[in-house]
Image (cartoon, rainbow over all chains, first blue to last red; front, side, top):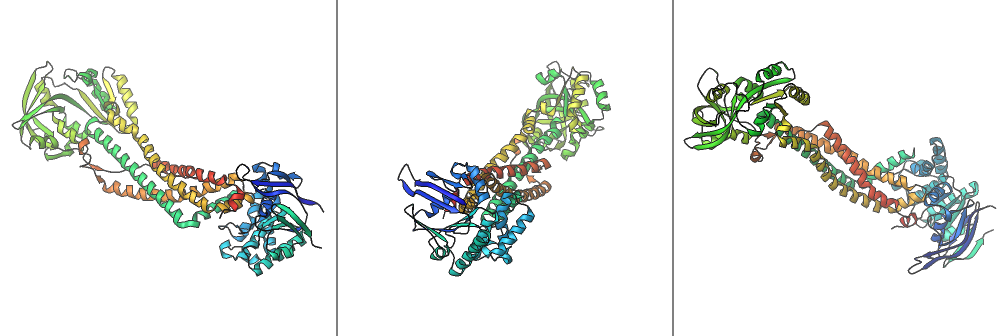
Length: 229
Length: 406
């Protein structure tokens, strides 16, 4: 199985010149195509920091992150923005949809950034909104959707650009049980049917139960890496 | 294509916090309204000042013996007067002209005396040029067939010297040889114009009476003329100056530097008004947009996370303020326009306020189309400039920090 993400000896130190805080201590991690992986661990273990570094939102103090044969730590500011747009889908804990756009517009937003045609956008939006079960809510704004529905729109948006993988930071933290189950069903289905790679940070047991690989972090280091059979 | 989406987001973002946006819109509307009215008021004032000076005193062009201008002595009369009159009479660009005999002197009655400028005029010509006959508020204008030594004086002078129609006065002035001469005149009319200082100093007698007293009925010191179209000012002036080089041909701006100053400074004052108002507005815009960005930090972080580059983010914020400007500017202009329109009809009574500078009339604000355009462009530029700092702050955000902002 080809690796989508390769993390080598990544260290992250906050405030190195004053009171250094070691968020990550030499993390090595490889994520293969089509994996459905949960990064777990207690608060402050480094899950979100690792996710941010893999997503190019933050820089490692040391080490490298190889995605698509490209060390993203070496990319310039504008190159990393372009890289994120083309290769990475994000799902955030607080949904972070654009409140002034409809569900449809939110989903097609990244495709517009990519310069996709109207026809391509329409087709992809239809496909994804069907997949997340919101084809009837295309013209609703986020404020007219429930939390679970908003997170499903966020998943559709993350997938709209056909990224190599999706990073989801605590995607179920604000959802009730039913919405969590629905969201996990959708992501699991997309993972299995379209071979989309998902990497979550979570401490939600329901997500952990559904993940096929669980990587546990503690004090900024990987302490276990289990793949379910 | 994406720019359409940016524009859509920017437009909708304005209405996320209606009260804040409407407050900014309101402040711009008031600013533009005030600016429009101030510019129209100043424009109206300058127009009134210039037209008052041209109509009462200066006319468009004056011709003198150059030495008269320097020395003010009565012996320096206009050269080649007869030929000059022929040329002026045949020039189609000239609306009207009048010749004057001028003399500095003193007016006296039993109550006292005052210095004055005596203007010996041809009543018909003067009426055509300065409409002096229409400015008579008491008594009558000159009647060529009757009375010896009639005089028309200003209302201000009449009030100060307690003169009435039929009052007798004595004028004392100098002859060409320097000898003083005095003659009795009878007030037949009192005029009132828009310039009280002019009213106080200038009095009118018939040229033929003055000529008789000076023993020279061709003693012309000044020819003043009005043009049909003031745009022909330079052309007519140059033609007359070249035909009669021995005389000094000056336009009203050259004769009266203060008129020239008002006219030339009108543009500068307009820009000063604009800069002051826009300077005040820009802080309101910056404040509102900084608040908007502070509220949307997480959203901006998300936009950068999913691949929106900094230039597009910058543009989005600039569009927001430009939209606010484009909503507010027409409203402000509309209110300003209607205010100017109203006062251009009813006028603003400036009699008391401007009496000390010699102007005592109703001010009618005026504003040309060019000024409306200038104001609109200024508001848009201000909105863009006002967006720069907030937009700069937005693009300096780090996605990872912004997205986790509570």
